[in-house]
View 1: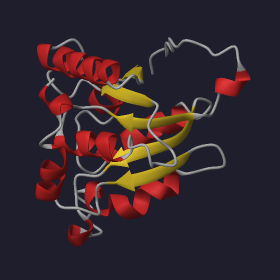
View 2: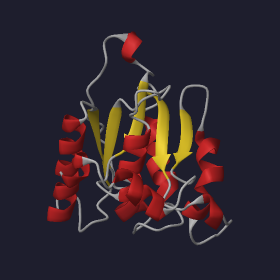
View 3: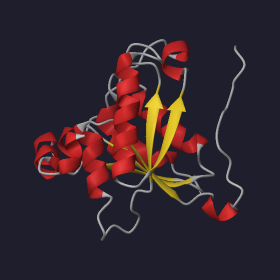
Length: 182
């Protein structure tokens, strides 16, 4: 075991604690769909923060790919006037030894739990539509619609988003938005 360093800004005003509405920002189809769908004026809980997770899966923690992912998240959050939470974790490369479909959704949702003093709602972007629901020991993403809500507790609620439509329907929904060309 190695020592753990946690570097976060603290909130002095308790009114800000537990009110953030969070969604992952990766620059991909699933995260853009969630971002656009849950940023609409009629949304009861519009997204207030994006989260960018650096788990070293794209060539290491400081790789060009990982840095590009961060800058995309930064640009998207700035364009949408969202706060950006940046998490850098060794859980995939040093604990699990690699990113795998068996654990990826659990790892990303655990970040919402780690931030539960800040986060009230976490919209987790599913890449699998409900028609492909399956209890699969190889790919936990196939049952996100079931397991995501199981992470909810009295402080933080988790919702699986995007499983109500197909990949092509997501692309159609976001394709005319200028923001996706960032």
